[in-house]
View 1 (cartoon, rainbow, N blue to C red):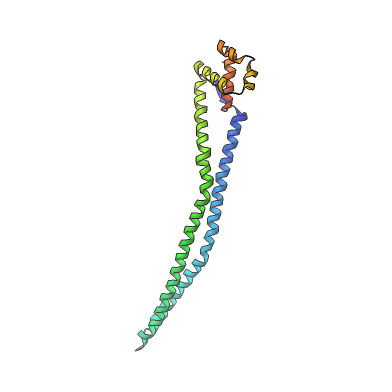
View 2 (view 1 turned 45 degrees about the horizontal axis):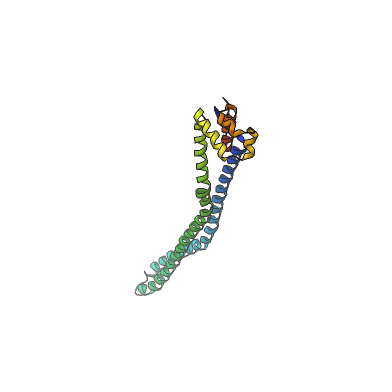
Length: 202
């Protein structure tokens, strides 16, 4: 029995779902990156504060060094410049702390935004996809031999809607009991189509 992918409806539906999942993950990642970049803009004041504080501290330190060269009173004149330079360095440190805080906030918000959509994919779609792949693989292996074909036909009898079964034969169960090849093939093909596969008669 030859097995090949049945494009419609199961395989196409599965492909469409996969594409939706890929798009969903892409949009989620892009949204998280956008939010991260947006929050990162809050660090601009901290960058300016750090730059201004560092520059002011350097200028005050240089001025204090020059004043310190004044004979007799140089040390006394240097002290105010040193205190002012220390205060400027504190401003620069505050700017760096603000930037670190913004970085942490941006990362935390980006992760928080990703948790829900990625969680749906990892714990919702992925297990179903893996289960479908396993079922389809097992069905394809079964359909390769007569015994497997009989098992697929039996599963179709047990699980497929009655309307589909009666379209195969008016008394499909009796035909299956007799081992009618055409009926068994049709039942097996029905079960395979349910998984996106189709069997073609021998």
